[in-house]
Structures are given as C-alpha cells and as structure tokens.
Image (cartoon, rainbow, N blue to C red; front, side, top):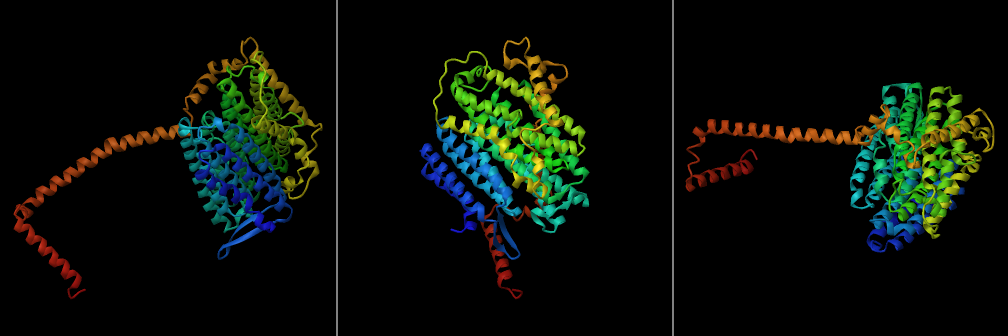
Amino acid sequence: MSAQSLLWVPILVPLAAAVFLLPFFRKSPRAGAMLGLGAVVAAGLAFWTAAPSAPGVDIPWVEGFALSFSLTGFKTFLLGFVFLFQLLAMVYTLGATRRIARPYLHLFALLVAFGSTYAVILTDSLLVLVVGWELFLVALYLLIHSGGAKAEAAAHKALIIGGTSDFLMLLGLMLFSQVSQGGGMTAGVGTASGPMAFWAFVLIFMGAGAKAGMFPFHTWIPDAARVMPASGFAALPASLEKVLGIYFLFVVTQQMFVLDAAARTVLFLFGVATVFVTIVPALVEKDLRKILALTAISPVGFMVCGLGVSEAAGAAGALLYMLTHAAYKSTMFFATGNFEEKAGGSGLERLLGIARSMPWSGAAFFLAFLAAISLPPTGGFVAKELILEGALHGGQIVVLALLVVGAVLNVAVFAKVIAVLWAPGGGGRGETAGACVLAPLAMGAVAVLGGFVFSRADALISAVAGAPEPGLTGNVWHFSILTVVSLGIFAAGFMIYAAARSGRASAAEAFAPLASSPVLGPVLGMAEAKKFDGYEIGVRVVEFVTRIVFLYCERMVDVVGNGVLSIGRFLLRPLLGGAHNGLYGNYLCWALAGFLVVLFLLFGPAA
C-alpha cells in the first residue's frame, strides 16, 4: 500500500469499526472496546508509516475540483497528539465500560469522532472539513446520549447550539467563497477589504470558536459534564473539540484571512469574555465535574486572544495551550471518574480527602494540576508565556492585564480543588491498578513533560511564523519579565485562596461568601438559574411565540374560516340550492355531465 493510500486509513478504519460495532458488539461492550482500541492502534500505525513520505493526495471529484489531503510537519505534530489522546481515551474506556449506561453508543460515538477529527485536520478542502465537522457534532450528540436518560436534555442542548453555530459558519463560508473567488483555505483575504469579507470572517470565527467552547456557545458544556461518562467528556469536550475548534481558528486567522484591527478586536472581546464568564462561577461551584467543565471553557479565551495578537508568539502559544489543555483536562476527568466511582458522586464535600485514599488517581490529578496552573516545566508554562509574550510585544497591554487576572483566578480555583482532594481524612488507602489508572497517569505525564516537547516544536513554529524561529518558543528554564509575571500569578492565586479559606471549616466553602456578596451574588444567582443562557432564553422565546400562535392565531384562523363558509353559504344557497336537492337521479346527471366534460377536454378537437 502506498504512503498516499495510508492517509485514508486513520479516517476510514475508525469509521468502519464504528459501523461494525453496533450490530455485532451491542451486547458485548468490553469486546467492542477491544475492537475500538484495535482500530485506533491500526489508524495510528498507518499514520506513523505514512508521515515520512506522504506529502499529500488529490482525489478528482468534479471537473476543476479535487478533494485534497496533506500531511505537513505541522499536521503530523498535531495528529501525533490526537492519536495519543484517542489511544488513552480508548484504554480508559476499556476499563470503565461498566460505568457507562449505553456503552455500545459510547464506543460508536468515540470512533466516529476519531475518524472525523483526522479528516478535518488532514484535509485542505473546505467541503471535506465541513463534512467531518458535522460528523463530529453527531458523534458528540451520541456520546452525551450514552450517559442514559438523564443525559438526553443535555444532548439536545448541545446539538441545537452546535447546529446553530455550524449554520453561522456555513453562511460565513459561502460569503468567503465569494470574496476569495474559490481561493480555499489559504486565500489570505483581508478583513479590511470590504463588509462582506469582514462578516464572512465573523461568521466563520463564531462557528469555529463555538466548537472550541467559546462564549456565548459554551453553556451546554457544564450541563453535559454533569451527566455524560467521564471518559466521554475527557475524549471530546475536554480534548478533541478544543483541538478541532482552535486548529480551524488558527487556519481562519492565519491562512484564510489577513486580520485588521477591527477583526482582532472581535477576537479580544470574545476571548476575554470567555475567560471571565466561566472562571468566576468556578470559584463558588461545589461540584468537581462542573468546576472542571467551567475551567475547560476559560482557557479557550486565552487561546482566542493568542490568535488575535499580531505576533507569531501568540498564535504558537494558542496551539500549544490547546494541546496542553487537552492533556491535563482529560487527565482530570479520567481521575474524577475514578474518584466518584468510590465516593458515589462528584460533590466536593463527598470528595474531601479522596486523593489520599486513591494515590494513583490522586497522583495523576496532581500532575494535571501542575499543568493547569502553568507551573514550569509543564506545557502550560511554555504555552501561556508565549500568549502573554505575544500580547506584550503586540502592544495589547489591556488584554495582557486581563489575561493575567484570569490566570490568577484560575490558580485560585485549582488551589481550592487540590485542598479538597487532599483534605485530612479520606478513608482507607486502596486502589487497584488497571486501565482506569494507567490512562490518567500517562496523560498527566504528557501534560507535565509537554514543555520540553514544545520547546523543540519547529514544525509548529514554521507553520505559525513561516520559518523556524528557535528563539520564539524559548527554553523551559529561562528568566524574563514574563517569568516574574508568572511567579506573581502563582503567588497571587494561592494567596487569594488562603485568604478565602481563612476561618472556613471546609476547603469546599472557601469562596462561598462570593455567592452572597451584594455585587457578585445576584449575578451568580442569575447565572446559576440560567438567566444568561442563550439557549434557555431561546427556548422561552420559542415557547412564548408558540403559545401566541396556537392559542390566538389558530382561533383567528377558525373565526375567519367559519366566516368565509357562512358568507359562501349565504351567497351560493339560492344558486345551488335547487341543484342540490338530495335526489339520487339529479346527482347522477351531474356526475355524467362532468364525465362528458372531461372526455371532451381529453379527446375533443382542441386535444
């Protein structure tokens, strides 16, 4: 098999395994998980075999148009991480099938998501990208559904929000095809070239950002986190969704468009909003799953802002942060699945000291914690400093300051979580090593060691800057003004937590006073009641309009219809009353006359 043919294997093998799984492995979830693991391994081997000698392949489709796929150094770098995420997610699922309400649906959705992710990243054709994009949405819907009946509402919410944002993106792509004259994913259209170009950018940006979990399309994520299997959230919303969304945002901001000041302002506004609308509620949240979901959204704001700065450092940092976040957040959800299996829930009060009694899962969570607060030498440290460096050198001082504040609050949130998990007590020690322990430990190690990998990511830097820039990524161990800023972020975050914790009996209640404060209290209460949730607002609007239509308009239709019939009877009764006298012979004559008219029309002289 040629190297070009091998490019198809990572796409087709997971999809074929998914189709094969449903009819034959529906009642054997563990065997189905083995099949899925084998499919992922086969796809990975094909990918690594093709990587050195498969620059690309074009498949003629219609005249003048081909379906293009390529495997550059940059894509190889990304897909290497994607394969690792898929492999460890499937390993964890192998040990956690008994925890999943509908394991066959879970495995099917994972495999479809894996295949569509490869398709989106490998392709250079917008058509293939859109097909893979929509397949991923279907997989996400089914994966949430695999949580059982309790997950159906969250699945519908995710589908509607995702479908709406995808519709916006499709509108943007249609506008883009007009302004670029079919230029494709490397057109480089200036957003300042006209209103159509600018709005094409905004619409595509909204669709791509929504896939990553950007405000205001993020509200389904906390709901889904509460009800879907931990392995499913780790595999898609925590990792692959971020990879797809930020990857395409990179393509949009660095290849499809040349951004002007107005376009960059759009990125900054949505990026900063994404940071704060989720990190502040995370401070007072008392459920670990929901905290992890909220802190899975906030980093998207950092990534969006990184793509918005004019410096290559910002874009490189966004991509590296995307991979680091996928690694550490997946680790946290894997470990949380283990914690709640023993504790019987994910409430912070239930989980007090749980890491002491589950040392392997606790160690994995702690590794992820180091990356989450961007402590050196983790990938988070390198990535976040690159984003801040891009903002500093790009002159975006206000954005830089706001991101620093968001980073401080992020440290405070995770300081609370760590204090809860390692609180005194926690019951007897004991945890059986297995797939559910191996996966989070391996993923946590990836998150921590990512800094060393990223400092040598020449393929990624070449994609961002156009040529290798060894000084761009910097070393893991270095000292600069931003290093001082990072140290200040760590210190301020832990100090804020310590001050909030002072005098509180439980670490879980550290930030509880914020919920009753005169300023933040009402806002947080309204947010908890979903008063700011665009989906819930839309549902209420639709219900109101529906009530108006069916309660009032339908009655109006009945009134008008009855009135027309009454008028018709009044006007036509004198004319038709004699003809319709109830006599059978009379009706038969009318029928014969009508039949003769039809015959005349069909076979008469005019015909």
